[in-house]
Length: 200
Image (cartoon, rainbow, N blue to C red):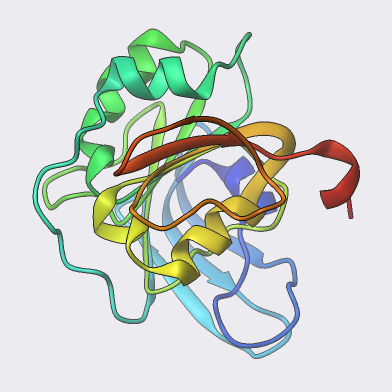
């Protein structure tokens, strides 16, 4: 995981959102390969093993193939310029290498990607039963169908996106009313978070 990602992570326990503390044991450049991440509120400790974190909790099973490719993800997010973090939740994480090549300079956070997908110079892998990402911290968020059927994951994904930026969700659930819907089919929607109403 990238050391800078620590600023965007939160504990998944049921308490108010709080920063976490990273204690790295082994680094590879800016990547933390081994160490621990701790929550100062509840004392939860999450190990970093070979660059990956596992916050625990039940993870949604993969429910078939995602329709999201690297090209569609980049198009739907509509981002200009490098930098920042983009979260990709679930099966679409298999397209991480393609997204990275199309968006040089962006850092990807793969939450519960398919088995065999590992971290790299451009991606961090996190596994968790709930989205461990702070509110209003991601330049873009993508949720695959395997997690998009769960309202809790959709709500958390919307919260994690920066105001003014987009959320892409594979789901038959309706987008929250406060979002500006840019595109929608019967199984996918793209929406923008309004700036004024979600600023904290």
